[in-house]
Image 1 (cartoon, rainbow, N blue to C red):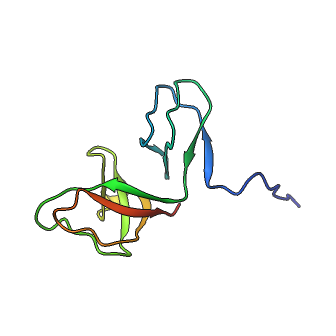
Image 2: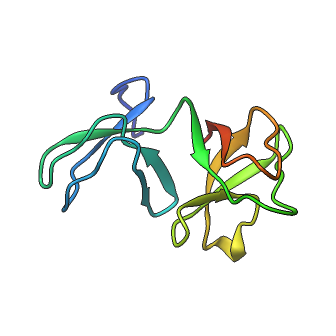
Image 3: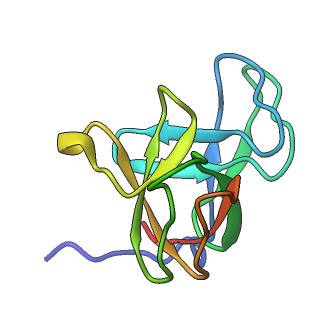
Length: 113
């Protein structure tokens, strides 16, 4: 029978980008969404946070409010957090931990991969 071997707690995962990644950049790898807490140079090993609480950008204006506890997805094309999964095109980020109003440019999200 195959056995799993513990590697680490899993709050961060290794990532080697093909181009430079800035601190705060959101990186999508398949269904895994992570945040670079520090800059990562192209072709250099770095790490992405896949756990934690982060402020993500969101749309503003009418009907853009997000309730606390809402499931949120990353719209990579517009670089915004949204409640719209867009048929699976937008990848799950996690849940909002605080409500964000129509005029708020960010929403606080607990990453939940």
